[in-house]
Length: 317
Image (tube, rainbow, N blue to C red):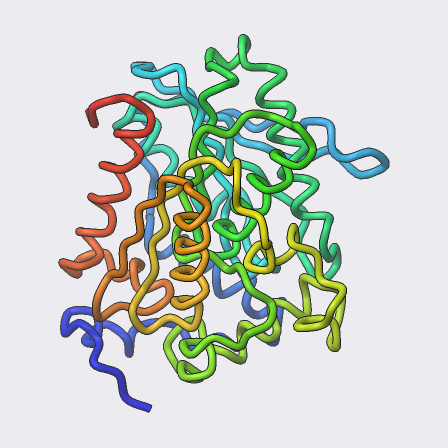
């Protein structure tokens, strides 16, 4: 099927890698190679990044996190980053370049978490790792130099889904306070029944086949997605109660299978009285932001920084 992509984005599509997400190991290598080729050498001037292992969930391994501390600290808020990758790909390197830039430009301390990946570690392993890292961050707020009441959870794609789930889990457990949730192209719904999911079966980078594999990995095997036993903390779109959740920003891409579930989630939040901003970027697809020179991609980057600056209470540097 052909799509009316933004012309700048369409011109770059032939240069994108074609990786079958159903081959996990090949996809992991492809993602690592793409990140390395895109970012080059990261200029960490003005930011100190340190890797530590924090206590994991009971009976589970420690959780690796990377703490970014800017030389110029402009806010007591904490940005808690969860990387994407369809629940099965990625590590601390995925968001490294972005985190360095955000820490330096916004003067914010960032904690980025490397959660256990599916299919080797299906739900709830990854989410519980994120929760454990969030608890550690709050308990060590003085050491980090942050206010534990001003935590912003931030995630892209599967990271956005995990960020939404983390907000639900923290609310229901009476856990750490989350002041804001930034959900970029979030992966939220295992049922795969939305119009965009059914329609976009061959879009670049992410499509309905990849979504099927992703949920099969995350939920522990075929036959579970769409079933009656999937918890709301695995698939936040299933939640019937959005009350008491933190304010949110939700972004979606026009030709993304995940588009409609992101829109529906934002509508659910709004219906529950949760202050929510929703933005659809036209002519885009899931992951098209890797085409950084495109005007719409630069708009997305600028808006991300503007929204974060506002909720963190700072001016970009």
